[in-house]
Image (cartoon, helix red, strand yellow):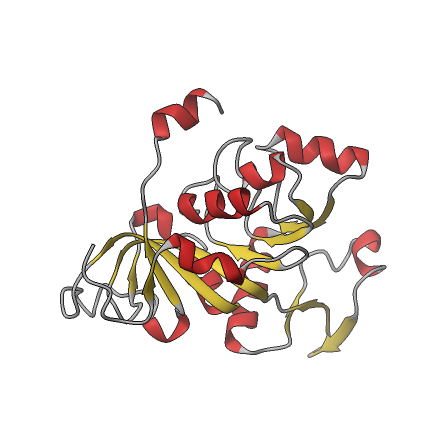
Length: 233
């Protein structure tokens, strides 16, 4: 790891004060891929509970954000689906977990709106479903009816990058990019866990996806034993 000459670069222990019971956490990732393993482990170790989690899905029981769900650290999750994590389904059924389902395209646009400082988006997805319309505001525009979907933000956003530089500019690895750029924009505080932290000037400006202006803290990842994880999926 390069020397910590920049304030954004820190260690996992330096981040403990950012997490507390009852907070909202937005996370990048899809099925666990792109979800920061070290930050999830830190939250588990801290014993943080009653969380509102915002992200694409609930991962698998022992993969990605699914580890927090399995340990019953979340009271609510806003996601597009939970079917890959049977524990999430079980807790929903027993009333131990509140789930707000949002279609995947709608979900990411709500995250993007939050990051851009907008109040929400208009969509016609679900506008014909009475169960959806019952709980949401509708608006007519150009002769069409739209649902008003509120923007999504979080107290803390946690993202995973392939590379970061000391200013917090981030590069992602192929499909691990998924929802990470959106989550990075929508947190009051954004923490990036990076596989590698490189010196300034090493990143090709054309490859940078998330500008450092959105990132508050950078921590170098300690990696994850994927063979162990998948054997216990």
